[in-house]
Picture 1 (cartoon, rainbow, N blue to C red):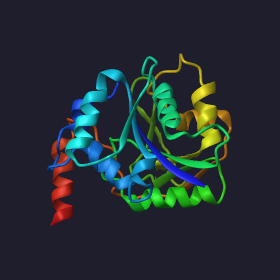
Picture 2 (picture 1 turned 45 degrees about the vertical axis):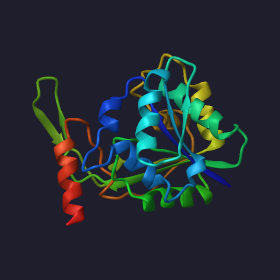
Picture 3 (picture 1 turned 90 degrees about the vertical axis):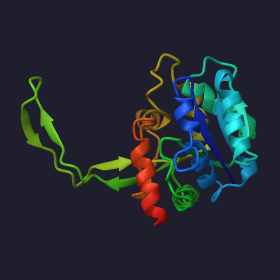
Picture 4 (picture 1 turned 90 degrees about the horizontal axis):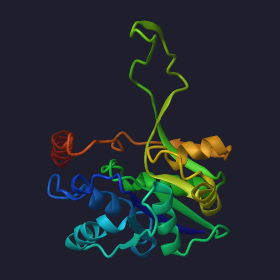
Amino acid sequence: MKQCAVVPMTSSADVDAAIAPVSDEAPLVRVVRSVMQAVAEGDVVVATVPVLAASVQECLRAAGLGVAVAVTRGSGSRRQVLRAGLEHLGVEPHTAAAVLICDHRFPLSPGELAVRVLAALATGGEVVVPVLPMTDSVKTVDELGSVLSTVDRATLRTVQFPRGFTASALWQLVTESPATVADGLDEFHDALRAGLDVRVVDGDAAAFQVELPRDAHLLDAVIACRCD
């Protein structure tokens, strides 16, 4: 089974935050280097919109990465960007392929996690996502902000990146999802709505989400601790 990866950068992405170095390396570069531990460089593509393409290409080139940049001809919605990535990789709807979707907002997601997701896809399932048990206290509140109850966390999980899809499942989502769906809704939510076979693997504590540039100092501190 062909293994490949797409890193989508939509028109709503904060490209400056994605390519600005944190601890000497851009979050986008960290994500690409990580997934290349599981997927060959030639099978990784950063898919984006025309207005961001030059900045993304320069960031990758400066880091010495030969990863291709695919540019969508559409409006730049997430679905159109993903489609551009699939087309660049030569992945057709009926191709026997496993596709990882990465996110630059999870810059410390380890390569081992990508390997784990791909291994799970190879054993069945149309979609595989890494998860961790929910550890925060979760409450239900009313419209006035009063706490009503505590939610049982036993079955709750937080979902991380990268996420794996069979080629047929991902093509179904990028072609059948209505163009009017908000860009903030991603292909994982669409997969659940479509009733696809979604499976999970153990996540990794390092694969946490950051909002940049707001969390740049936090990310820098975490990286410094890892280096120590």
